[in-house]
Every structure is written in C-alpha cells, then in structure tokens.
Image (cartoon, rainbow, N blue to C red; front, side, top):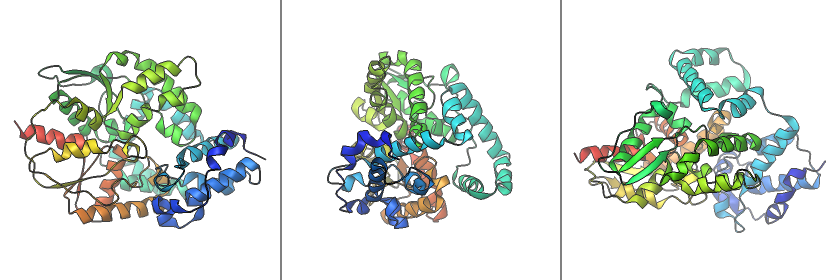
Length: 424
C-alpha cells in the first residue's frame, strides 16, 4: 500500500540521482557503512513507500530511526535535498499507522506542552538521579530499555545544582544602563542540566545592557517534531505563541540553546496552514535570535578581560550553515577575548552524535560519531571546547571523559561571563 503522506515530497525525493556524494557528509554512514544509513538509501525507501512497492512496517524502522537529522548529507548533495525533512515525514507516517509508546505520547502531548508539568517532571528526574534510583532501575531493566538507561546514566552530567526557576521566581540581574529589552526563552536542557549556564547567560545579557524578562514558555517542540509527532509539535508551538504574545514588544527573544532558537524560527513554517496562528507565529519567529547572533548584532562594546588558554568551537547542527547559518558570530566573540588563543578544529560543523536522545537509543553509532569528533578536538590542542547547545555539551563532555582528553566543555555564555568578570 502506498504512503500518501509522502506524496507532497515526491518531487524533492525524485531529485536524488543516486550519486552517493552524501557518503562524504553522513556521520552515521561513516560508522555503520549501511546503505540505509545513507541519504541515498533513505530516499530510495521513501520512493518505494510512495509507489507502494514497500510497506511502512518494522522492516524500515532502522532507516527511520538511525538518522541524526543533521543535514550533513545536504551539504554534499548537488540538489541540496533536506533528508531530515523526508525522514521526519516518514516517522510521522509510521506513527500514524503504528502509534507510539505510551510514555512518549505522555511526554510529548502532556508534559512538554505544559511548563508546570515539565518542571515537576524535571525535578522528579533530578531527584531520582541524585538519589541513585535511576541506577537502581537500570540494574533491573532488561532489553533495549535497560541499555538506553545505562547509556543515559553514563552520559548525563552530574546535575548537582538547583534547576533554574522560570517565570516570576527567576532571579535576573539588572543592567547598569538599559540598551535593549529582551525576552529570555528558557531551554529545558539548560534549565535542568546546566542551570549554571542560564545564570551566566543572564549576567552576560545584563553586562550588555539588556533588561531581560524570563518568559513563561514551555518546551520549544523540537523533540516531538524530531520523533515525527508533528501534531504534538504544532500544539506546543501554539501554546508558546500564546504564552509569548507579550514578547512581541521586546527588541528580541533570545535563547542560548541553538536547537530552541532555530526551531522557534521555524514556527512560521510549522503553523503556516493554521489560519488562527500563522500570522502570530511568523511575527514571533522574526523576533527570535540565538545568543551569539544577538550579542554580535547588539555590539555594545562591553569590556572583556583577559583569559588564558587555547579554545576551540563546535558548531551545533541547528546553528550550522545547514540550518540557521550562525557560525561567524560565536567565533567573533571568542576571538575578541584578550589572551585567549582560538584554534579552529577540523570538521567543526559535523554532528557530535548527541542529536537530543539519539545517543541513548543508538549508543554504538553515536559513540562512533563522537569519537571522530573528539579526535578532531585533540588535534587543536585546546584546553576548552565551547558550544551553544545543552545536548552537545552533554555529549562532548562524555566524549572528553571517555577518551581521556581532559578537555573542559563550556557554553559560550560561560566563557564570556568569565571574561567580563576578569575585566572588573
């Protein structure tokens, strides 16, 4: 039986001429060597599903699930086919036919769409990890779930700090002089895993004359979208559009999570067919700026003190030239810090293998991708590895530990915060 959900993408899929140049840019194919891990293989499957010569059943699940959605293939594709769009559409079609696990449906449609439930669930997860319940559960959990839980325990950071409190409870430093009024979009990954990054970001914004309002947003919706639950992603987007209506009066909506900022910019496309939200989503998307993008454009000239050492930068996929094209800005900020040596790493824009929860579900492939990344980090001789994504921070730190590199992984806002403090 044909898969009608893919018909709108038929012309795009037909552009694949099976040349195989996508091999050069696919991190997963470099590890697995499997044709279904390659964009060419995925396009072939999608074409067969449209024509009805293949069923959308369990036999294609590997091709649907082991894609990083990083667009590494797109960078080497002459027609520029966005394979991630096709894979997401196939995941959506599969979900409509076969459903999704109850836990995932609960997560996407009940928890991530509600900031109150999200914070409660996040606090419960932190409590379980800190008191050893996650490790105990892993010992008695069998099969794929047990393996995924084991990977998560190995990879996740200690998360010793208190989670960042959003909304009216947030502690926000005040600028000496107000130059900009911004809304701060709270990232789930940063608020729970790296609250120290949130604190650094808010201090840096204040140093640059920003009067910052912490928005009462919920998850941006990218996790649901990546898994193919497009209905849940749209529902989350609508709720955020409503929650952030007042943010349209700000100069910008800023997020230091590259995945969040890039997906918020996609709200206009995501809700284009919704007459009640299309215009509002477009207006919101135009206000969104990534952290480094905003700072470079603001150019306040705040004094930076000297920091020692060599630093390199990893491009999160969603800020790379394949998505948001925010690549020059973070490097400009790092190179402006006196005393610090910047060294560019080979393949800086290659995916690190995290891809949200991909590393938990496909740990072997993700570890292979990560080891290649860490090999390139080692070539720079850098002591500090900087990025702008919590999932990347998590995975790169794991890579530094598991490869014995001793490289410190930090968010750009943390490095800038240190430099501003050094100027005092």
